[in-house]
Length: 76
Image: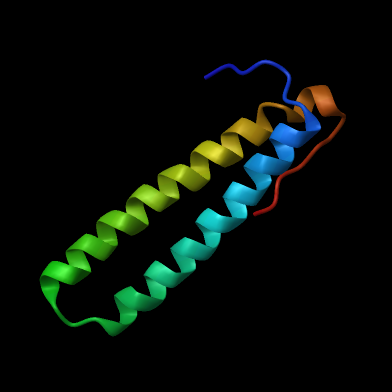
């Protein structure tokens, strides 16, 4: 996916969403360690997988901006 130049506000919004997704992933992992029901574990695993795809997508969006921003790095 090729994006045009992001504004500072867009970058901040993506970074905020990235932090929210990472927090959600931590919570889902915690819940996965606590539940016993296989159906719930399966649902939580699907949520964890989808959340990881979101994190990867957001990181990719920010990293595509790195070369034009003189060494801009993302939070990981």
